[in-house]
Image (cartoon, rainbow, N blue to C red; front, side, top):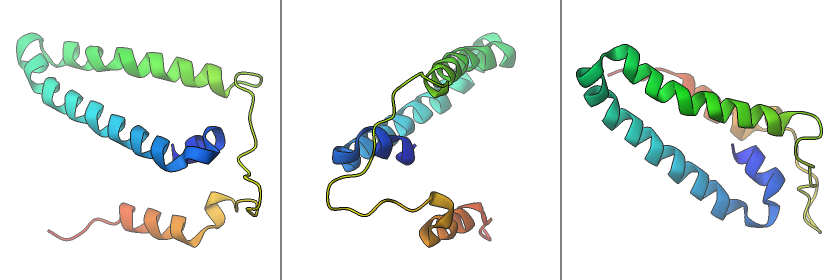
Length: 106
């Protein structure tokens, strides 16, 4: 998500990255809090279906926006800044991915 935010909101990256992450955490907490009561009330199939609907809608919107000609891309380059490196070439990216993927002993 941060790469998408940088592409579309190059001048306000911090604000929109924070907003995106806050909304993801909020809706993740909502889903976690509502899953067990939904399962207890109507079964796990219903609980799964409830969260499959917004996921399918989001996937359709994402697919439409990612299609060629979906959303015109604006350059993320701000005057005076050098062009960005690809994410997979950044050392910080690999460090975060490695640390995030490692199971820590409990």
